[in-house]
Image (cartoon, rainbow, N blue to C red; front, side):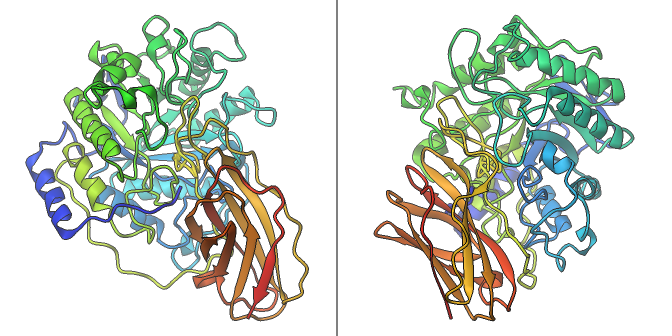
Length: 544
């Protein structure tokens, strides 16, 4: 689950992007086939045997407290889907949480932009996502990103969500989409890390064994699905890599499913801006990267053991190191003819930003230019015409994205990225906080406006907080401020404009959350760069 400042491409950069897209041959079978897929050796194949290279993007939000894809407070679901397809992607990865699957309602969907989604449950919204993807020629991979909507879990189960619940929900989804080949695969659990092991034999920690159990349960319902298995953080030899990124153990202890031709391995990989892994400081960087990837997961494809789908990778593309990393990775994926899923479409991924700008419409041309050798000839479509500014009743927080060991990412993905790593999702050494809980009681209504401050997630380099603001009388505007010692910057804000000065954050309602009618309540938020989050800040509230 991470919104931020992004690279702005010039017209010249856009021209370079289009030139690259025209000059570089796309991998085999760009268009998504109409039927089911299967594997053979290191290839994913259509029913007729044609190779299919997954070219995906994640659109997160269904794993967050909103229980709906983010951005639907601004754009229509079909508009986002059309733009993803126009960029050259053929697959959509949809993160979700088990908590949202059981929820009765969503939040932050604008009724004007998405009238068909009004009153839908999260599961019905997921149906609409699948239907829209189908309409736009996209395949869908379902990604169990989190058990609950608060934070990424180390293991596939928690105290609240058992292994049985995890498997039962996968059976339910496999049944729900059993006759729809739009849904081609299931990403069983996002980024196992911490105590998760590969083939260690401890049933409470052995991710390989758990993935085998869940994969076989899904295949018993629909034997035509691809079973997508991520790696672990700590490899059998004791080395560490990204959360979900270690698959070295699969050489001697592979996942063995009851139905052949269904297994796809899926590591995650991120640049130095997400976490400073040791290989980023090597004297021969970035030439050393292919050997790192080959050792951790690429060998599975090279040796024809099974297909590898790079399930998350992304960057704001703001540093020379990140640009070197992405260029080297694009070359590696192209050479290997390896599938990939970019994190993320969302611009509010804290670690990586997105494929569109904060307006959810303007293409990030520099990123698309860098991805052009993988995406083929399709280029960015013209930005959709702006629609009237929506006025959701509540707005979401960013997610976080991926995670390594001592790693980054509050998945609030952008992993998230994720993130806020809504999850997705890179992550910090210290995992994000669990389900958000209010840390400040509502302020007294001395100005006609009351506010409550709630910590959503926190990690070693920042935090995400939301404000619930309620007007007791009609106001033209409002301002809330609080002390945040050690804060160094405002990363992103929604529903308000925020500034930092002398350790105090001051936020003023903006756009749809600015003027408030008597009795109206809005939920807004901010992401802050800081070594720690305040525990119970005193709020100063003013109104005009």
